[in-house]
Length: 464
Image (cartoon, rainbow, N blue to C red; front, side, top):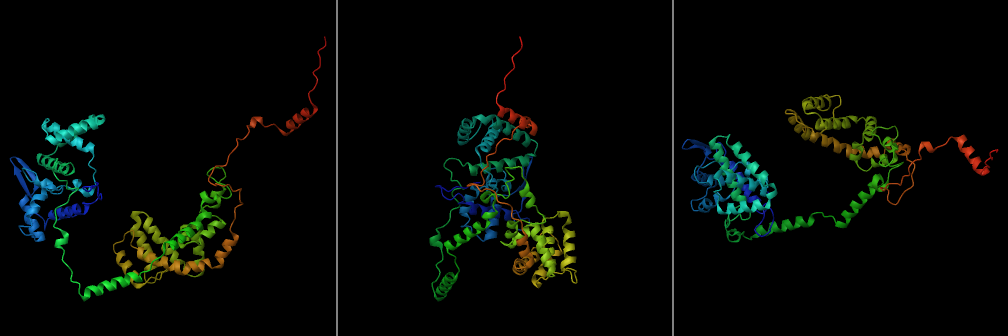
């Protein structure tokens, strides 16, 4: 729900106030520390979980230590807000508003819903509406006349469904719905609680003036020193970094730089897909160069991860990458196999004397072992991040300097360049192929060419 200010101010001006009130209503319904609910009998109808205004006032005095004088404004304002309006209705005192009608649910109070509510009330009371409701009813009938049949149908269906409930529940729902529309469509002259919150004292007169002694100025000086020592980056340097990052990926963007050897989106040639498949014998040069941009680029590429595993095997640290892959399987795997995967990771990588034990600091190990007792999908996150940073800072730089990576760069395939156009993303003009019926065999084509070279032949005259 959009909460607007009185003069077009901030659209969520009163949301903090209403959120605090909703938290207070939740505390009121606490079975131990809240208001004692009771069933209230109205002739032969029982209203469940009822409370009175005195119960609310007494609970607020006891909960927040408010004096009787301080409760006077609350007595007058409690009935104007959506969370307490249901308890302020005449007759029996139903329970507070259900969360469905709260402002935190952001249920938009549309004209169609209000029209259905008025139509339902008009049918139930046989046209006996309040003056401002009659005016709104007639106005909505003119404004949404094209959907008025739907409005009446919905109102009758809701009344038919309400008859199947118990009378006590029916009274509670009617009171809560009426309270909701009193808040969202207040009567003329009544203040809107969505635009004007509870009255408060002047914050300037009630604010406690802090004594500006020596301790106060010491804290101010310390704060200013920390603010001056804070590292800041110039906007020009940030922009240069963004430009450098984007220029780095320009050759790898098929839209900006085109596809080599051809664009598979506009042609029938699938060589581009075949050369950039997840597993190929020889990768392209652009693909291998991209592994050097960032460690995440290397891990997200299946072929790059396989090459990193080969390198880590030579350095006897392949268990780090295997542990990271097992944690990824745990995070994105099936829910039914979480316990099985966690136990497998513990037995292979974390248990004392494990065959592929990984080096994790003591604090991370303690947190991980404590979380294993109640396994879930993210129980290995701390350990996975520790191993990830270890590979990024130690193994990844040595992989880029290794003979393996240099050989991959040297042996990488460079697709043959095609003619570059000014706008690579534009379609190349294609010509239609000739029909096979128009194609002549080689012998027929030569004979036809000889006939043309000889010129026109004389037609023999018929003998008379």
